Image 1 (cartoon, helix red, strand yellow):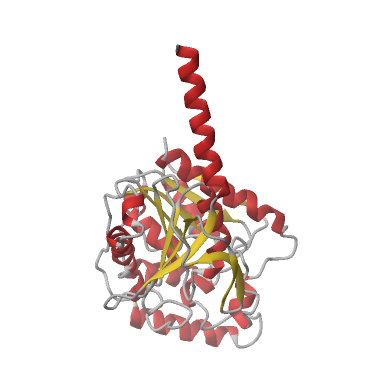
Image 2: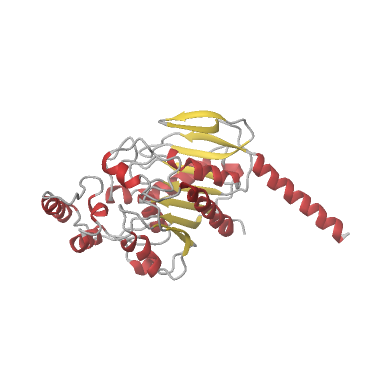
Length: 343
C-alpha cells in the first residue's frame, strides 16, 4: 500500500513538473492606473508562442495567451534607470519555465520613455509602485486566482536593486549620497552624476568635477530617511544595486532572505562602494552570483545593443566577458527564489 502511494505521488509530481516545462511563455500588459505606468506580465501559458516585436527586440511569447497555473508564486521585477521590461525578458522566461508569474511595473519618471525623475525622486516612489503592482496582479481576474500573494519574490537591478534593498528593510537618505560623493567623486564618478558627465582623463575633467560637486551640494540636501516594506514579499534579489545612501545597520539582518548579484567590472556602480559594501555589512545575505569579468549591464538579456555614448559604454560587456556566463547566473537567481518561496 505504501509503495503504491509513493509511486502515485512520484507520478503526480512528474506530471506537474512536465506541465511547467511544456508551458509556453505568455505575455500581457496590465494598463496604467493613475500615475503608475503599465505592468508587463510574463506567465505560463497554454497558447502557442509567436514572434512579438517590442521596440528593437523580437521576443518569442504568446501575446494575450491563455494563462495556466504554474507554481502559484509571483516575482516582481524592478528595472534599472531608463529601463524597460524587455531587457529582462530572458530572465523572465527562465522564471516562467520554473512556474513563476513575473510582473514588471514601469517606474514613473524613470523609464525608457521618460527620465524626468531619475535618482532619489524616483527612488522615493519605486517601492510603493512595486506594492501597487502586486495589488494590480492580485485584482486581475486572469492572474489573481492563480497565485498565492503571501509569498511573493522581488528582483531589482541597479536603481531597481536600490528598490530591492529598500524592500528588504533598508533605510536610505539623499544626504548620504552627498557625503559619499564629496569623498569619493573621483573613484565612483558615474554613480554620483549618472550619464550627465564622463571623465576622459583630459583637461576638462577638473571642470566636470567642479560642476558635479556644485550640483550635488545644491540638489542633495534632504536629510530625511526613507523606507518601505511589504509583508507579502518574502525573498529578494538585488543585482548591482545602488547602495551608498543606505544606513548599513538597517541591512545587517534583512527582514527577508536577500541575495546579491555582483559584477566585478561594473564601472557605473563600483562594487566596493555598492554591492560589496552591502555584503560586508549583511550577516545573512547570499551571494547569488559573483561575476568578476561582468560589467554593469552584462546580465541584461537581450542586450540593449542600440545604446550609444556613455550609456552604451557603461552597459555593454567589458572586454573578456563571456556571455555564456549569463544563463547560469540567471539560473542561480531562479534557484534562489525556488529555494525560498517553494520550500
